[in-house]
Image (cartoon, rainbow over all chains, first blue to last red; front, side, top):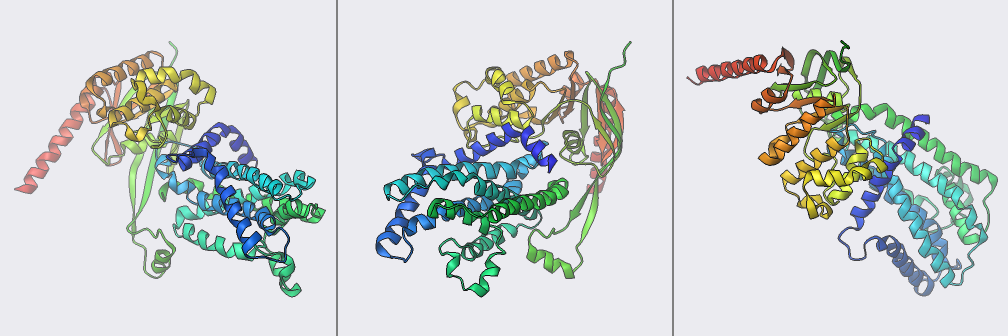
Length: 258
Length: 257
């Protein structure tokens, strides 16, 4: 872990340049360029608001905000993971020719998605204002679930990027895993809809506490319990520790498999 | 007289690659292979190679394809970790192992200078302060702001060479890449290499261009089938190499008869 922090700091300029590169390449050759990072979530939000605000009416007030408050962090998680799973294999040509600390690739993949995610909060705030939904003061709590989410995603990224070096199926499995995980998480629904006797199962989801934190502070304007707060950070730290340990253990063998 | 410091030390280095006939790259193959026996053999790319290179030396490495030349450079660069034996490298390294490794096609030359420089271990500030010299040396002119996917291989190589040498490493590793430059640029590259030597830098130079090797190197290593079979003055080692190649041609000829 010390190594992770030290190397991330040491290669911070490289990581940042790689992350910017990913973003630049993603939006290259499109007329609106970087603006898409804002426009994409904004358009999604408009669609969702129209669908759930006028066409399908749910018993949940302001369903669009209810949904978006956790859909955006989820989108970050799934995109970042789908992206980082190939981060080592995708840079294979480079790793075969120059010595580079291998951790820069999964870290850069996450950093570039973090930038995207933070940008997507801007249209969310705008939408909330436009819908005359209150912009709760509890937004100030957001850095806590965000940190938990980023740490957890980074840990998962290390794990899956490592696995993908040895078995390329992993990138496909991740896709399936993500869609199953999506329905297993209280994103389109609330945990209250789940019968009491099955609820423990949903509590096994390590992302639950983070998502809960987002929804509570954006939609309900409440703070989560101290317990939930600690769990959201705890899950992130544990995931990062496990993911990075595995990555570190196998990284010297990557070169023979890419 | 002060003894020149040793920059690179190889001691009894063995590099073995496990060549698996069909490596299970996917899980299905892994399960299928579980029952059958995986067929593989070990390939020794380097067999007990020992040598030293001192500060200020320019050492050529020659040998046929697959004799282990590039493997040596990659071990020095830290890409491979040898199977056994000791390797000590003392100083910063700039590898010019393959054209434009680390270049991203969608990015412009200028953006690639930054990315490549960072990959080589420079800080952003250091790179920006050298940017204009790099662009000037690479003779790219207005092309510097064009995505590198539109570059010719000569332009690629010029930019790569300019970056690697502006990084000002203690050790420069060059693998065959000078071959794509035109005569004029090659002359400029060798001028710069000469200048590097006067600064006491160490250069390892892999090439099939025996004329350049003879002209510039102080010493030449000859590899054959992963073994270091000769280490000495250029004229002597090159003649051994030529004799070896002639022998092989002869044996091929007799086979053909």
